[in-house]
Image (cartoon, rainbow, N blue to C red):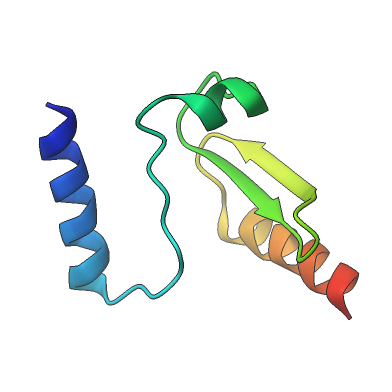
Amino acid sequence: MLCLALESASGLIAEKGYRFPVFYDTQMEASNLYGITSLPTTFFIDADGNVARWGAGMLTAENLQYGLNQIYKKQG
């Protein structure tokens, strides 16, 4: 089942032409480290590797933009 999910996700990413890094937490290491209890969960990580913002559940376009702005503020 996991293999099928990875293939499906990888296929969608390729089909959409996304070029950002995608990581699969198949061993639940990141989930445990960050205390993720629901999916989707989004983390905005700055250039120094720090979590600038995060959100549980589906993000609105406004929330997504806000999180991205927080990262860019720290870099600029």
